[in-house]
Length: 322
Image 1 (cartoon, rainbow, N blue to C red):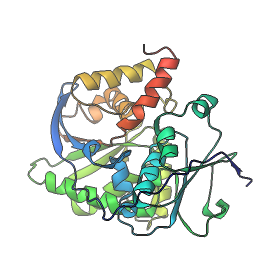
Image 2 (cartoon, helix red, strand yellow; image 1 turned 180 degrees about the vertical axis):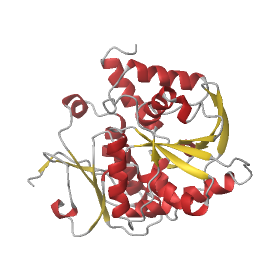
Image 3 (cartoon, rainbow, N blue to C red; image 1 turned 90 degrees about the vertical axis):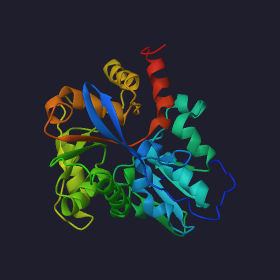
């Protein structure tokens, strides 16, 4: 693969003397769409700027890693994982190299959101024709590095998922419900897969419902089955709620904005991409979650609110908000 490089930002590394320990997140009761449910507030779990929520879980192993080896990853120019890794590398004094495809002109001319944050944090950006099937063998110019796949979808993410599962078991131990369902908005399904894997073996009354935000149920199941095979081939995959209609990922829509605003008025602030889309699917099929009185509902709040500013800018450019 031929690599072309854009200008990089060189900033001094800010090394830290000790690790920041994440003490977990609370489980709160919220009433929304006519139903009382529990919310696992990982949005409150913040270690550093843009390094919070589900990224603390999936990158748990790297947060506690004493290595100074460079980290390499790839994905979109506004990716949450990109920003989380940039923050982690700046915090730990590690070089961060990130591969992406063409960056839109407006974003190159006026960097914003996760893209600006990552560049300001010292990320070296490498532009390639395609990141599909990018492997460590295609990374050049580094004597050694740690490779993080798209969305941190790899076996090392299981460590943080186990920590989350143990927290949930402890917090839910007083519940008398025989059927507790934890809804997880899912892209690659990494956290949902590893969370279900631990819970099924250690808490028979707690299970995961993965809600596909990228693609449909078949796509998400395929992603999780593939990750399962690459991480022990345990054969445990969570249930998946299939959307009524497939929608383009992250594309601004007035219906999505309406769900986002409605949740906010009811005291539940979610992100515009993953959280809002997951709730759009849940509202379309109330019998699966919020309308099912036979289960205890737990919504896993993955965080990601930092990305809302750049997403709202897209809504403004399209005339969907003032």
